[in-house]
Image (cartoon, rainbow, N blue to C red; front, side):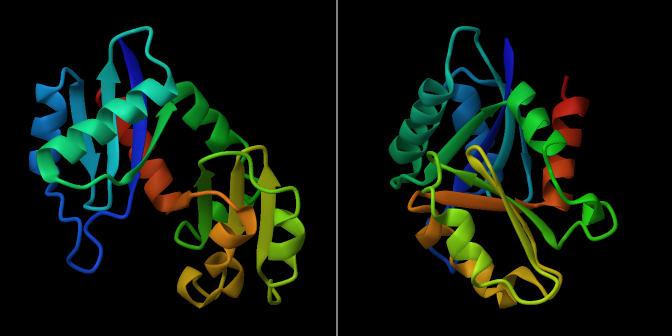
Length: 181
């Protein structure tokens, strides 16, 4: 069995795409996943799946389960635990431990456009920082993610589907994976 971190985008937002976590855990367990745990209501899942599945297969299977059981298809990121650890290790912002809500990890559905860093850098205000590393974008928004023009432009600049989690959530998800194993 392999441990997976699964991130969903576009659920439980503004009353649409309602997805109660208890129902989601039951649906995924019914579909053969084991050790299914969730963190808060925004689509953070830790689970185990049989060996031999790749990220595309896990994401597709979860997406199909949600569509079949709940009638909509959110964007799904399936990340191996090893890859999740690499993403945490690559975080370029040491201030994340002191300001865990201000450092954000942006997961992309594919490689960001080559111009992503330049486009986002043009929008930073004093104190903000952006770093692109492979298929990840890391943001430091000391004035808040909701006030950051840089953060608001990530999807458009990267030209790919994205979902983000702050450092606090990333570490809580990682702890959940550790406790469940």
